[in-house]
Each structure stands twice: as structure tokens, then as C-alpha cells.
Figure 1 (cartoon, rainbow, N blue to C red):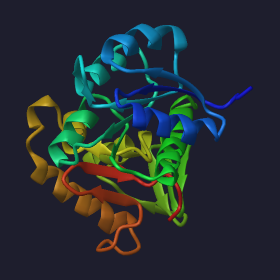
Figure 2: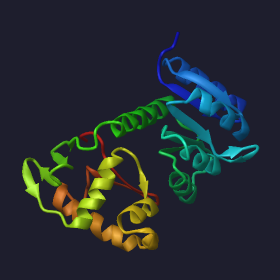
Figure 3: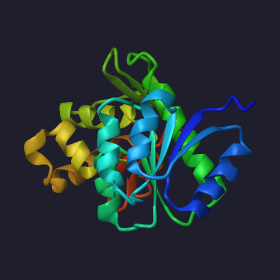
Length: 232
């Protein structure tokens, strides 16, 4: 019997379901499948999946709306699998609560890597929030509210610290510009992307070995930013 993580696949295309079933089943994942939003909403509460793979183009509704409904009751990572490759679609899905976005077609290796990152992030979220976060030479101590690089204390402004703390809380996960602005500056500033660019540049100058080629604070073009959750 497979005893790997449980996965809910929400996909209406039979060929894609077969691909996912073969790819994930051979790696020990426990699978359940839904072909539309109605089935997914009926299956998810009783199955309680550890990760959700969600197609956006469902026959009875939009996957973005479904992601919002899932987020009302579960923190399970949601990875969107979609033929829509526009930045606007990615941003909408991530803003709705998705953790990651893969554009079809994609390889098995990439899918498995994204799943590992999502599960790692979910596991970290369950750990004591007071635990230090270490990525390479960077160390964030939330108890002392201190940030060090290679053992040297780095002085951050309150906004810089809030910005870094938010990215660290979701390390490995892409946060959209809107999500970051809403959390750090407030709901009235979700369009002020120039604030975010300025403060990200300041953080990189303080934390990165080469601010022009960042290895920790990664830009996802047209979408947002993420803090790398492992040493590069």
C-alpha cells in the first residue's frame, strides 16, 4: 500500500489525469481524483488531502473561485496546473490562495520538485513560529527580532524587517505584489508597487553578497517575490 502524502487531483482532462496518476502513483503518493468543482468540494472535506493539484479550466466553474473556497477551511498547499500562462492568471491564482503555479505542459521532475517545496513549506508552517530561519549565511531570529549575515548583525528598519519576516514566514513560496503590499503596508496600498521595489532593493543591498544578482530574495517576473528556502 502506498503511504506517501495524499493528493487531491482536480482535473477534467482524462489524458492529464492519466499522466498525473502514473507520475505520482509511481512515487508513492495516495491519490483521489475529481473531474469538476462539485466533485472536488464533495471529496475534499472527507479526504482531507495534504496537497491539492488544481486545474483552472473546470467545466462547472473557475479554479480560482475554487481555490478561494478551499482557503476558507484548509491550509493544504494548492498547486495550480493550467494552460493559462499569462502573468495576470498567475497573480489571480496566487492571490486567491494558491501556493504555486505550473503552466502546461510540464515535466514530471518539475512537478515533483514543486510538490516537495510545497510540502516542505507546509511542514515548516506547523513548526513553532519562534524558531530561527536560516538560509545559507542569512539567519532570522524572530524572538530577538534580529537578522544576521555570516554572524554579523544587520540593522533593518521596521518596514524592512516586516517585509523580510513575511517572506521568511512563507519561505520557498511566491508571494504576489498585492499580497506583500497588503500585509506590510495595509489594504490601501495594494497598487503601490514602487514602495515594494524600493524596499526590496534596500534589503538586497543589506543581505545579498551581490545585490545585482540576488541569491536569496528572488524576483518572479510579473508576479512577486520569494525568499529562497534553501541555500543556492
